[in-house]
Image (tube, rainbow, N blue to C red):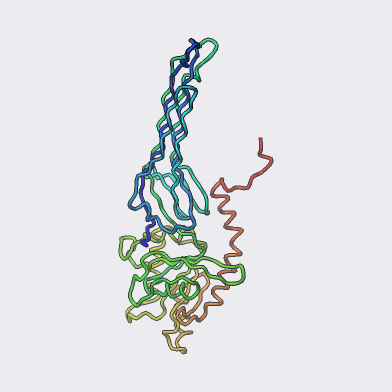
Length: 360
């Protein structure tokens, strides 16, 4: 199935039904009084995060969504039925933006989370509502209100703990295949990865984390080179970045240090906040070097890059050096969990702890 991580749609909530003006007409009851019922509410357009979906492909070809209108009121005290709500199902991690204002309407980060995108119009009032001691035969009713309509932009950001970053052919797909059950395409040419892949890494009984592999970045991605920046959004929810660097490129003119710096530069152009996230350097493809050359090559790259974070030397293909790396990732994620939860509370008041003393 084709991977789609952005879509534009229009949603139309249902209109409210009109109120009815009617009077009771029965034999031997000459003054039956008003009996016009209210109109029904129009249906809402809602959205729900479904863990069984992983792409927005359903919204690529169908872009108009309309909820049902409310029924009109009728005589004999009959109120119109409310219109059925329309429920749209999207993958977990979907953000819903207003296409015109850019406002974030919903961030569906947990399975089963729901939000109302467009509210249905209220039903009109029948003349039964206007009856009073001084107005025994009201001849007025109100029409139903129109439902809301919005142009929306859906954006999917996959949920993962760790994101893989690097040039094409740095070994990201080989790495995620070695540490999880994910099976991305692996080949000896650039851009074999055309869309994100997720893999679950199990480090111990009951302990695991999710790794996201995205297509490689190249110099000039900000200007559209390669696949551009379009997949970097899938790293924005991660807590840790693994920057994979090929220590033994096939091109004799290639420089691993220069290549690593170009990736960091593209990351800063896209999102400085993402570039400031913890980033570990993973020097991959040690199996391509002679055993006597490995230590010297790794030391030279570390010295020239002056990387401040942890540095690991591995071979994803030969599965060398993976255990210490995965163990340290698991430890770092567990240590960061309280700080990440506090950051979410500070950023979004909806997740703030409830203080009983604030109750009024």
